[in-house]
Length: 362
Image 1: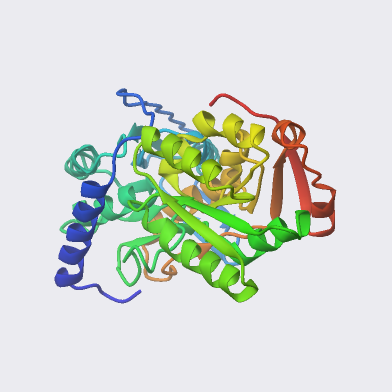
Image 2: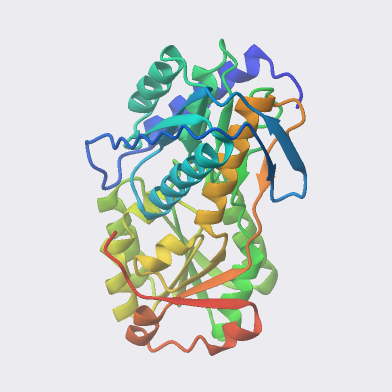
């Protein structure tokens, strides 16, 4: 990866500040969740295979101790799943490699100041790597680690280039980039008679910009009308969803947007009762009541991120890519929402692997 300039990092910090001015918290707790695990077996070598087919031979000291900070941008189902998968994989690496890996899971509560405090303190405490989950957390961690060049290995950044997280020597991670056109194809396969599409997203989520532009281009090409509704708080999401219902949209599309995801439980019943299917960018939306998605497995993404972090700690980052795009292709459908909206999703079986889920209050 190319050396990034100080000027670019300063611009990155300014970009993060701008997003904070636009953003507000979703439904998050005020608590910081801490989970620390250690292991001290005696093995000294192992081979870890990454998902891109490159084997990494790592020789380690059985007395080695590593400390990792896992920093969620906020609390919600997707980010919680990723954090738990990272922690589980670090435990597995610890046991397999015969080293001690301690980690702490933090929540930044979608607040830039809180995230900066967490990341700065992790650097001061000598963290061997910081694993930020979601875009704002990754941008803040990148700025915090500038002086020390502490490895920043992010998780679930839909558009690393737009987030200005590429070309930085000490930064890499996993991307859950969305196949927007495929989800649009799903919408029209299920209902070829769609006349009006609602686009529900947050202006504070840089992840949403590219897929929303892609959705508009797709709909423009088909001559389909669309209505945009944006929101930055839970109350605003509820209001925006009500506006789309009143506007008579046939379906709603939301990309991998953390703000909308945090409010999904507050809107899914109204949408289903109105017969409006909500297609979203991650399976966590669907588990919280949205109709369907096609995306990555976030447990696999968290596992991959932990593997990358361990590689960065033990072997350095010279041979690592700017980021690693995770494979998608899993269609997730909420059967309860389908029943409530009287929606037939049988057509999806011809488009890929279909996983059926029920609504969970998490």
